[in-house]
Image (cartoon, rainbow, N blue to C red; front, side, top):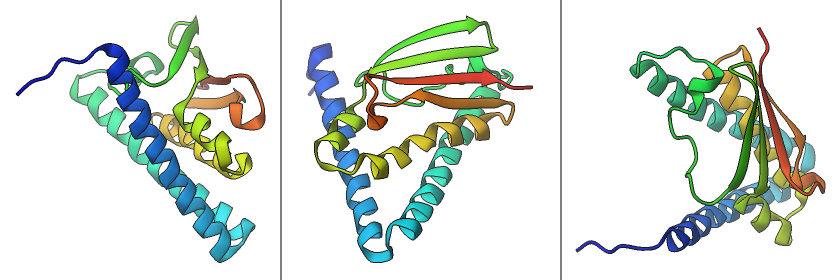
Length: 163
């Protein structure tokens, strides 16, 4: 039996799923913090986030290569990495295939974590972006120039081809 839902209902379902994922991350991060202390917990979290991001970037790389495309900045977005619904994004290509600026005005992860999680601990998750892009193509660098978890109004990712 199929059921049609509105885009708004689909978005709400995606946000709910992402917020549950944020809660899971929070639970793991806080458990590590209690068990091992801040320094060791942060080290373990960053290791896990790097491994996760690396897997995501390699998945995109594989999809791009299966389409017989080069692993360029533009082609990264040929393979879905995140749901189309759930985040509010504005992407601006500064120079085709050299630099891309992505502004995120709504992130369901940040919304969840800002309710009752140490933002510095939550912020470690965001390093997933650097790992994704560098494992997809080591000549691509991602930098967060703004981050809601640092107190900024929005998240801004600057994604650049560095070689």
